[in-house]
Image (tube, rainbow, N blue to C red; front, side, top):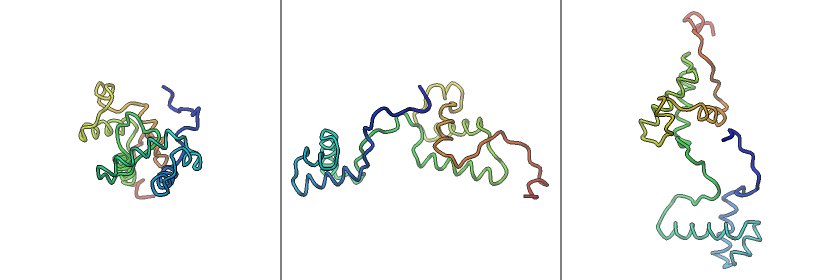
Length: 160
């Protein structure tokens, strides 16, 4: 599978706020789904799917917003967990203990096991995250600068 997927269609690019406005148009103003979809430049099947999900969520009392579009498939960590990993890596770098890529991959595997997350089989075979995960992690977090760590003496660290 390629690491960078090139989009071939314009599907699922509308923001959720457009769907919310169309939903209000359908429920409050009693406009048909097709005419509301045409007004907001949405596909009517997508809008009807959103309306159905939203009504079901309201009926069951969910407070989580209804999502549309594509999700990340087989993503190991959620956004909050990944931000914690990034924070740990940055904090380690600030105290002159930069982590090399292999250590970050091992850390990711250990955290996934601790959180009881579903991980690919290759992670269990070699007790570390894969290279594809690491490259995606670095693309999602461009503020990180990961290199092979070099020894820094106490004298050198005090000179900064």
